[in-house]
Image (cartoon, rainbow, N blue to C red; front, side):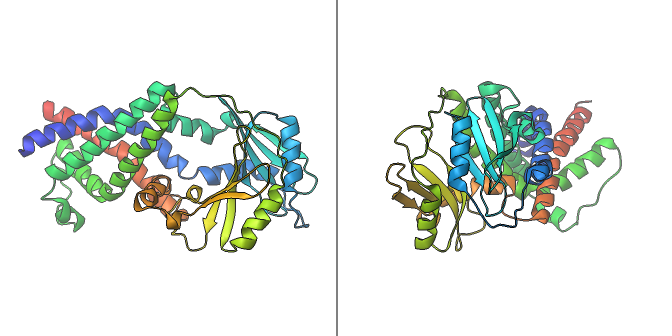
Length: 343
């Protein structure tokens, strides 16, 4: 295929997806720091008690009494620190902070009112429900196609640009933006390909989830000791660190405990290590380790950490922030080049 035709397709793919890339890029660059922003927001509700106590069972009982039939997830449970619950009920979301010793509710926050939550919904659905989810799925595909056609168009210049052998031309506005477009596109190419591919996979799951009819949770009261279950798991698997607990959404469903094994690679998701606990006997039904999973499952477990930059510290987050902003810049500069070329 000739370069002129490739450039034509590259322009069309970029122009169509460009409007949404502005939103995705800016929101994604902020969401990289969502955990840090939430930590600042939740700091007034954090308790660090001198007694290294964690009354997890009592905390669960307290929450279930006041919030019956809510889907419950325990997202933070360290000894001597506030226990954090995430409650869900169709479109409703709440964050609860429970005192680790007294088990009194310190704070009850409407999750949907938080800026990071609003931004996350914007990022994966444009606040447009199922239609917005599907639209962003196709946007991801178009963005990936624009990257592929861009590689084909500028294939002879890629290594020259990486080695700074192509000067930044300032002959006129179109030439300047064209050169800058190439530089930003080439230097951000690797990470943008990762973001596009992982974004397509994630948005497909989100779109498919939006097509299903949601059901109200019917969470049963816990009759077993979660503390005892955790102790049994840690005793048998001392290299396991539990990080996330999902209470059953319906009777006879298992209690699920996710976490990290010491030997797990840093880019694998914690949610692919899974202990299923029988809620009647307290016994472990099954154990799933990502280290023992198939290659395909391991690759799939990398999708979320790679897309959100969850595998590194502040420098990785800053890098992701800059790469995220490259998408909006490429959209704007691409539009300027296309408009000038048409004139």
